[in-house]
Image 1 (cartoon, helix red, strand yellow):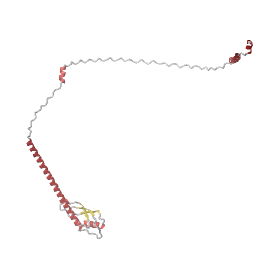
Image 2: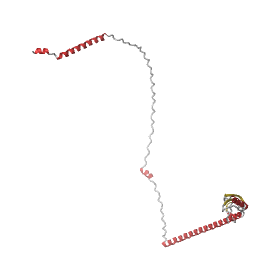
Image 3: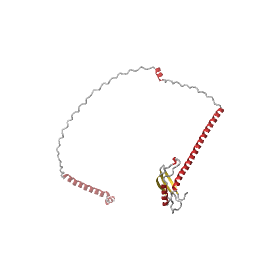
Image 4: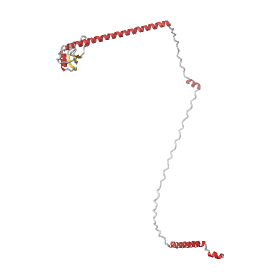
Length: 250
């Protein structure tokens, strides 16, 4: 019964063994076929190119460098050793280094001035102050006098100048012929140049009155009044005069 059972069952490893055996046989057959073909194939020809070797150039001959000349070294000169000077004693050196003492100036005793008594000193100060005050008063008085004289001289000069110009204007006004149609009291100013003798050199209208007929009348009167009156004092003379005229002034 057991034998029949075993015979009726199929071995599981049998199929696997059969497959492996078949694969091994196929692989062996392929190896044998390709191995024989590889051995029977003719080897390919190999070309080899032969190159003739070029002979190497002859080596250059190198001349040996001349040996350097060795000059003999000069022998060192032997200088004579200076003999050491005898050292002077320390006492002599100290005497030389010691500076000479300068003589001290003599101080003369000052003369003792006698003190001035307080009363005498006060009197002296009072006297000096009074002298200074008197001198100051004199200076002030002299300045006041000089200023007063200068003022008087200026006033006198101004009065004399005014009188001199008034006489000139009076003479010119006596020669003015007023135009009939003049209106108001306009002012005309003229610059007059004269000689020391009073003769008129030129007449120039500096400011017009606004009335041409009156300006011409005054100009004719100035020229007609030459020579002009002279000043009583020679220093009052003026070469250039500025004369002003109005028709209604006295």
